[in-house]
Length: 337
Image (cartoon, rainbow, N blue to C red; front, side, top):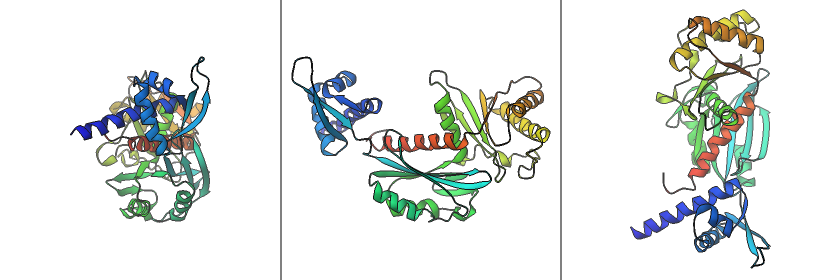
């Protein structure tokens, strides 16, 4: 028990040091001691272990007010990496973007290409090369429009990967955690993290329309994604509201504002979000205003719907994927919940 507690405390203290490096990649033992509250002796002992594991590099020495020079330590932001693969539609063409991010969320590799048909092993060659180039990859994150539960993909715009073979293939091949994130969930989380202050939490609903596939919604409540039972929350295309989203004329502003206004009114009556972020290539400020007016009218003027039209889906999506991947990498640093 004593050994276990000692190991636990050591990891807790290492996490304190890691958190300091995440905000400032270089530091001295004295600075780390001041920020963490740990003694300089304890910090030096932990730094020695982290240097041996290559998590921290030893830098140059700097003067310290006439005393002995202080050694600068630099955190190895490549100590753990994430490989991220996510799909989206642009100009009515399906695209796949592949990135590798380090522990600081910086993209060190990024490539985008057309990818019409996805099979369960479509990314083997790409990931083989990435694992060779970046051997510290410790998580694979897939972002796709669909629903996953317990490793089984149930609802997906790429039917050839439905079932459990897709995620199982990559878990068995690379022996690292593999996570699946719904596309709009990632995008709305990316939007939230970039635009909402933590001190004033909000409820935000993001909805994506891309003409080629059915729309989907992502819900963030006070900073956390709400996925509901079986991760089904946000599958708005199955709502029984007599709208065929694949046949609607997206060039008709009246038809679009009526349909989306109805959708937002229904969601507002259930969730009442602070903001709706609508991703599309057909909604401008005028149509967004019409949608807002329609939704307000349908709620008998009892709820003021705030709509934000955005064409930054891919970028918000990317930022959300990076955040989810970093959470897994950071969790791998811990020996406790």
